[in-house]
Image (tube, rainbow, N blue to C red; front, side, top):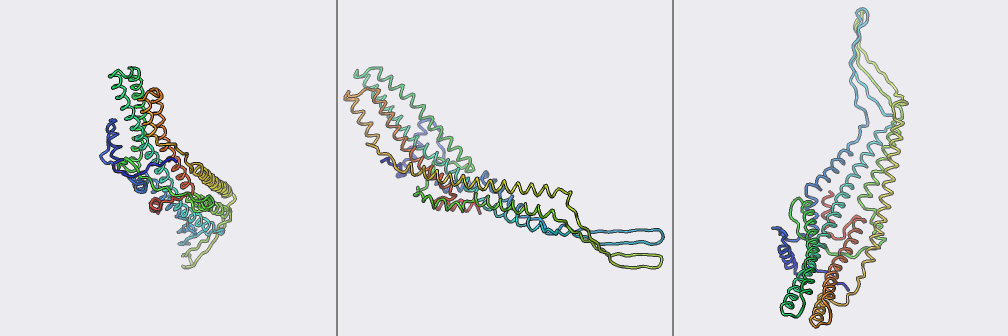
Amino acid sequence: MIRVPTRHGHEATTLRRILGMAALGVAVPAWAEPISEADLIRRVLAAPIAVADLDAVEAQTRADRTSSSILDSPTVDARHEDVVGDATTTALGGSVTLDLGLSPLAGARASRLLADAGAHRRAAVALATACGVRADALELWAANLSVVASLDAQERLNRLLATMEAFEGAGESSAYDRDRTAMAVVAHRTEVDDWVGEAERLRALLTSLAGGEPVVDVVLATLSPAPGLDASLAELANHPALLSASLQAGAAKAQRTAAQLDQIPDLTVSGARRWEKTPTGNAQGFEFGGSVEVPWMNGDRAEARHQGAEHAAMEARRVRAEAELVGAVRGAHRRVAALAVAPAVASDPEAVWTAAMDRYISAETTLDELLQVAEAVEAARLAIVERQRLIRSAHLDLSCAVGRFPDPAIQSVVEEAAR
């Protein structure tokens, strides 16, 4: 079975990587301690980029929570009339419009649903950020291990070149073997530099996302067994993105209802205190009035149709999001199962290299065959790293599709940011 790289003696491993980077001319960061996935996600969620995203969701939630008033703003009326002669009328009063359809109640319900959706939308943003960070951290982890494997391969070729030079100087091999080995050393150096460059790119990316605090290496969380398919599909009911989409669809339906109720006539009631001066004397009294709005020409019918179309669109988005997540869960489960059984390895790659060197010294094999073994040994080590990356990537895809991480430390960080 393939053995998974472990973190035993991590301090020595980190030092080895730093020394390897220094040997390759790569700038060594002053801060070189590895960081856990939970701490990295916490830093990223507290950094300006993620904070801006979360604050934007919070601002939208506060705006959605503000619903329209049940009553329109009342009006204050003042009137003074002069007629022929000494008769005058002064009135001071006001009016209020009553929504006979009570559309503001439906609007208030829509606001409450949108506010509830905002809380889940914030959780969805935190989840998506954590998923992206974990994916980048996994790539950095694999790149760091690949750099180590490539550095070992480079050192192996360097030692072989030194051996070929010694053999050539002693007349035991030809200059061709020496030059052939030197060409392999130069060609492989480009591959090493490529791996180092990829690792540096990922470090720069995670450092930027973390607000500028250097990120050199990441200690990945312990890989937990994947839950059953039925349990994963059942957990989708709590996915923040689906909860948000469902509430948004409900809010769109309430807004459609409010637009339909707006087509019902409104009643405006007015009243005033009045004072009258006539040639025969002064008098005081009250006046009342009312009017009914006829909303046939004010565009409410078009607004109702628009809100109906918006509700249909939101419901379609919810159905699509649910179908996509179900497909993602099923696909991730199959991928996890496909990668669960690791292929057997006959022997340790390093032991194969040692045996190949012994065979070459004993003149049982050629230099080209020896170089092919060197390439195969490195490819085997890189394949071990790549397989573990693929396994972890499949588990991560499953967690992100379900909407919850099995590691309690990581899940608590996400939930804390979503509050």
